[in-house]
Length: 321
Ligand SMILES: [Zn+2]
Image (cartoon, rainbow, N blue to C red; front, side):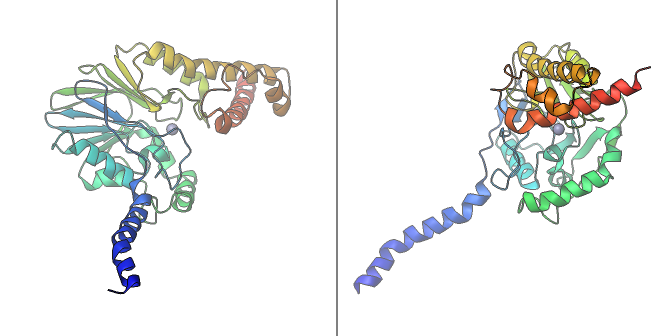
């Protein structure tokens, strides 16, 4: 055998292996591992990052509860591929079908996986206050931008799936004898926020009212109501609280307290600036952020959060008699 041919023979399997690795690398995405938070309750934890093609938009959490009649999923993750991977993680634990998906709110990173669960025949449940958002230009433009920013995970086939059942107040559903309490806690992070409490599991799925170990994105949130809702979440007899982002907490008083203290700090400092007619940039620069500056996501989130809070408090000041 000529030397060059021998070389090709020896290296061919290596080259093939390398090619396979290259072909698989973009598909593999970040690790997704189901972690138990109750006897039949689990969750997967998204990364503390902004959404990107590399992380498949795995930047938020999803939970699931295995009941004798089927699996109830809480939130659908940020791309159809992630939803498929969540189903595979569920399959490691049970053969039961996914019968319901309860959405804590309609933000992109929690809902772009919905079409996968819809295809599986699951019933989707959400708060009726999100209907307006689904039909808005904001939702449409965000999806269009994601088709570029998060390609190939979000593509022309990705769509915003409406719920099958819209709730408008506190609602209980029973699946396989397990009771899920759907508690509207908005308008806080969004108008349609729902927390899901499963008392038999002593597990609370708090959605994006609770960001654990990182700063939240405040966006257009109603932070006054948000703070009140966090106090409400602390009244549930939960052994574990699954946040929308970050690790599950077994010390909700301490961990939820951080989100609450941060929102209070934003409202106090920006509120004082508004009532003293201090322009935003000046107010931002002279505010002491040292308690929060080392918390993950401070860099990408804090200035925008402060600015949104400043605008909100201006509006609140105008509404005061
Ligand atoms: Zn959100």
